[in-house]
View 1 (tube, rainbow, N blue to C red):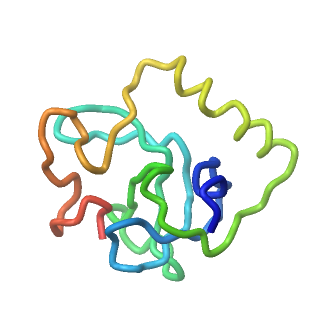
View 2: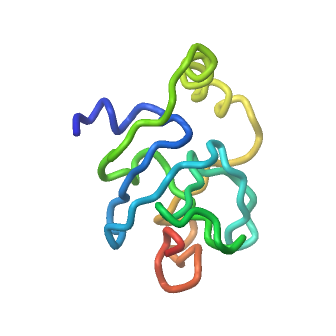
View 3: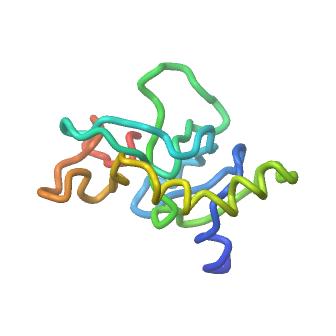
Length: 123
């Protein structure tokens, strides 16, 4: 996978694996996903669910950012609306008040896991 493909904002429905994950396939179901981690409310680039099961429990969403994507197995649907959203995503996020959270260090002060099971991605 080319670096450019991993750096672009992926469309909904894209199926990916993440760095330091267990190899599970994840389908992106949300972008700019708001979450609270260790008392800090912010956003991640993506929220995803296990593929092919989807949502079986409300607590099964995984949160991560573009830099955490290891490989793209499938690109989701892209039309004109998606392209406009993707082209403007970074500007939209730069102009809002919530901080971007990080899988490695969600509150920039320590390196505690953000999800149960001792896995920062939630699985």
